[in-house]
Image (cartoon, rainbow, N blue to C red; front, side, top):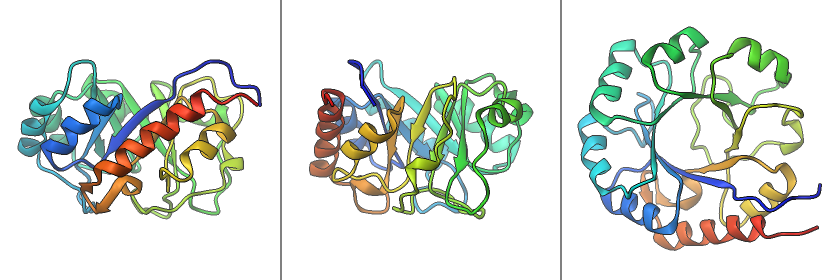
Length: 218
C-alpha cells in the first residue's frame, strides 16, 4: 500500500504513575489511558486518575477505559476525571456508550474464532462511535495480554478512524503500521517492565518506531 505523509496517533494505556503520565506527554503521545475495568491488573480508582491528570501536558487527551462497569461507576469517573474520550471493551451497546455525553471508542475483540464484523455491521451496531479499536482479546477477556492477532483480519473500507492494539511493542509497531495504516496505535504491556509500570526506554523506542513508520515510503 502507498502511504501518504501522515502522523499515526499514539495512545499509551494502563498508566498508574504520574511520572509515566508526564513522560508520555514529553515523548509526544496523543493520549493516555486510565483503566477502570474491574478485572484489570492496571485498574486505578477515579481519585488516583484525577490526581495523575495533573501531570498531563496540554493537548494530550485522557481516555477512560471500561468493561461492563455499572453506569454509576462510569458517571463517577466522567465527573472526577473529565476524560475527553471513553473506551468500552465489554458488551455495552451504543445506547449505553453514548449516554455519558463524551465521545467513545468501541473495542472489537479479534482474538476469537468468530467472523470479523463487516464495516456495515460495526456502524449498524455502534452508529455513534467516534471510532473503533481492534484488539487481540476475545472470549470475554480484557486487553493487555501482550498477544497479537492476524492483522489481515481487519475489515477493509471502514469509514471511521480505527486504532490497532494487541501485542504491539517497539519491535513490531513499525511493521504493524506499514501493514495496516491505522489512525492510531494503542500500547500497554509492550512498554512495561511489569503490569502498570511503564519502562521509559521502551516508551521512547515505541514513539521513535511509530515516527519511522510515518516517514516510510514503499
